[in-house]
Length: 234
Ligand code: ADP
Ligand code: MG
Image (cartoon, rainbow, N blue to C red; front, side, top):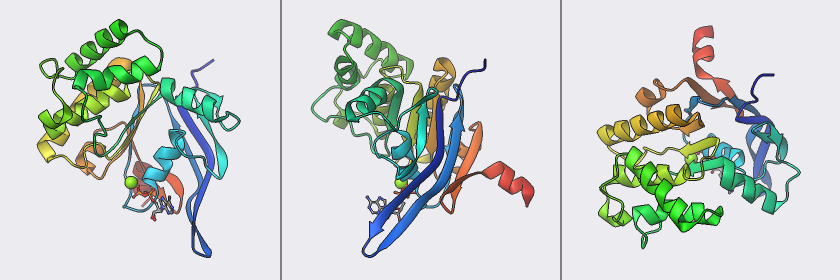
């Protein structure tokens, strides 16, 4: 039997109430991402990229539809079950790093592992290995404010994958970086995905980065469309 998608979303509906009206953001969105794939999500602002990532990351519940993580449906899980699954299977990276300012790079990567039940020693070993892999071996003791924007995002990346998730979701992770730094952070991300067999879904406005991912998706009227197929049809 073949491997299930790392992440599979089907029939996803999500609306927000706006006064008397309802704003239908996702209208039957479908998506499957396999282990080892890096997929770009490129769509104009306000079309629902963040909403989709939050739903995929079990941070927000859809109004309808199902999210399968590693082949397992998630809609019947209670809050604890969702949180547990998110902690072990899903990593999230935001546009701004969201690191804890009073903790070092190392501690920021250690913390989620302690929450997941690793010992301090194991967590520190893995955190320094990961940060070293991401080129931050000399920055372990630095606090976020003592790091450059690109370094902060690489620490955020290390934190997101600290518990060896199967899925990495990134919401415009290089959006605040200059083009050269964005390129470097993206290069690190690709290396990480290739080395671990993660499945990654990355919302970005950067078309040259998107061009280097395995597939490009966009949102059209609340549904997910393959950009390359849409372009080929025209
Ligand atoms: P994107 O990430 O593509 O810019 P979002 O997913 O953030 O888009 O938002 C999609 C639309 O949904 C926007 O029009 C936004 O204003 C609206 N929206 C997002 N979150 C909420 C919310 N919590 N309440 C009401 N409207 C929201
Ligand atoms: Mg957004």
